[in-house]
Length: 261
Ligand SMILES: [Fe+2]
Image (cartoon, rainbow, N blue to C red; front, side):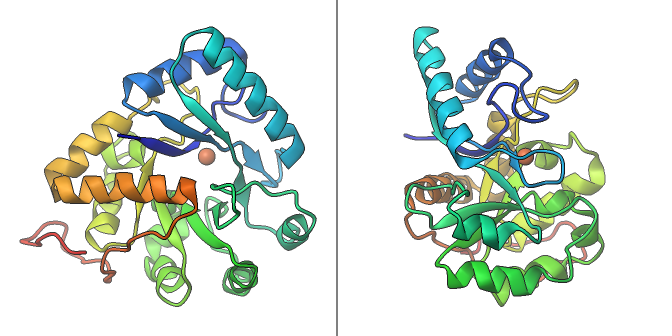
């Protein structure tokens, strides 16, 4: 069975992820150890620090794939971008400088700034959707504005068609209890659809996909873990994603909630 990681910074020397090919190969081997079979490579794009044009990512991904093969690492890699919402995004889409999660351009891995959901977000998402693209909001659990006001995410999922990606490390507690609890609540409320590593090469940060899927199975059952795996595969393939029933975040952390979908 395919295990797809939709968000990782494995490409060497293009952003704050892997610094060089040696580290990239190490991270790729880690991914394989974690059961990952397919990885969408998502360097930062248009985040105010890094620009990774479509053409450059395509070339770098091909080179990396070659090295993976030479080194016997059985990971299939695909070119992508972690796209930051910003004033130039629609122009970048219209100028064909965006890489989507899938080849057909149906899903976009979309990032917000760490501490806010910009006021123009809804209007821009409407424009993105008009172009036939569904944003997959990356790590909403790490956005301090959403953490303080979870309705911000619910509106984008409810009123728009957005999907959301939870980061494995958040869920297993690498960023602290608050983020871990919020991750749990987002899964419980059906507001996130997939788990991804967002792997960087940072001290104290490991490839935590296996651990996160084990926790997901323990907390919410094998069905939910399978749904997440299937959804990641569907996003990579540009297929429709089956959505769980979405509800508001519950204020109490735990209760007798059955599996909902
Ligand atoms: Fe990322």
